[in-house]
Length: 289
Image (cartoon, rainbow, N blue to C red; front, side, top):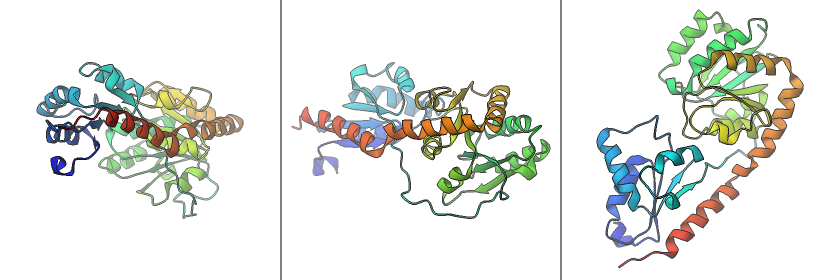
């Protein structure tokens, strides 16, 4: 099909599609851009796909990664000049419609968002929240998302004695509204490909605390400037940072204001311009027989 269509460039995303794309364009002279969208170190492919990826990626015209940190992984098997870091764009709804909150009116809320899986570290968040609110029982925790760990997390909240203050609404149609109602946001992930939820929270102008996990948070947040970074999987550090923001309204507001300003560098116009520049570059050297 690609040989028949003769496109100017073939672009693919995720490891298996990238491998298939590279095989499909072999011998056609069509430039190909492959892109990794997850954390390739933490989310490893079966051995045969790992071998294919590392042997075929060098034949791509360019490899797009979401963070600079992943570059070190890629440089083990592909020329550095072919590696380009282009983050995800920040997309927001123009109008944020009001919806019913699952939390009691007037309760100050800590918010988080993501699939309820082990990689997102919501067990770490629950334990940290329990410690941080030992003397602040008026605070609540909203965890938006669905996944296989939901029952486990609900039971953990019950065991910690905080179940009545932790809310699991599942998938939320309009998370932007809930983010705007929260006092601050927490990303507790053990690892990330690129933390889109963190960008959404910062764009909403609320303070954010993020685990300094591989990869992404440390490239988005400048610690104590537009957010707070804590060591990965460190319950005590996370609980202290949460307690700090619960007590310091002025700090929450200043971090949130700077966050909203600084994430503008991820606007669709800026990110799409990077893609357009890369596409223009690889198509200029196109040599189709």
